[in-house]
Amino acid sequence: MHAHPLIQTLMFVGLVGAALPLFWGQCRTLEVWVAHLAMVVVMATMFIPGGSAGWVSVVAGCVLLALAMWVTSDIADRSTALPCAADLTAMSLILVFVSPAMASADAVPRSDDDYQTSFHDHHVAGGATTITSWLGPLVLMCWAGIVLFPLFARRREPTGRHANITAASGILMLTGMVPMAA
Image (cartoon, rainbow, N blue to C red):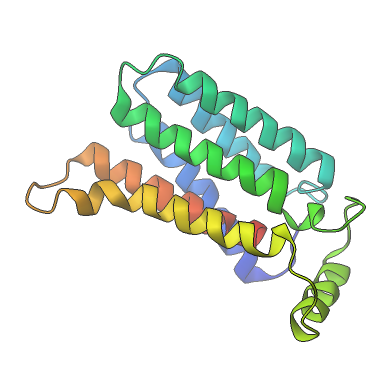
């Protein structure tokens, strides 16, 4: 678990964002309800010491990706399924390819001090660019675009409660995943 209060706050914001649709009645289908519950569990595991360890991140990411495919398998309600699938996919990409535990070459989880030292050395010394250095911010930017597009695409029409809850949930989850993608 990360000891820095700002990181813990961001992760808690993500946890609230994942749970928001569960409490506001947005989950109209069983698939979306299960997907948001899984996102809550994944966000909660980040608070457990070793919860973002290499194998845990990979398993959680694979489960979230499988849920994204399950949510979109029967897309009768696109307004709920597609944003949920985008959230699931972005979280799974960050967990599998970008999480700090997976950033080392041997994929062995390291302590926060080792991570900060190698992170600092990488950026100060101009170390070689790896996929983990640019994929995290790229996934976050794309995720933000997907979350915010419905709000800005309909400027003339007022957004409904459902769209606002979906956007708020996505923005809060995105905020909660920033420590994992950094």
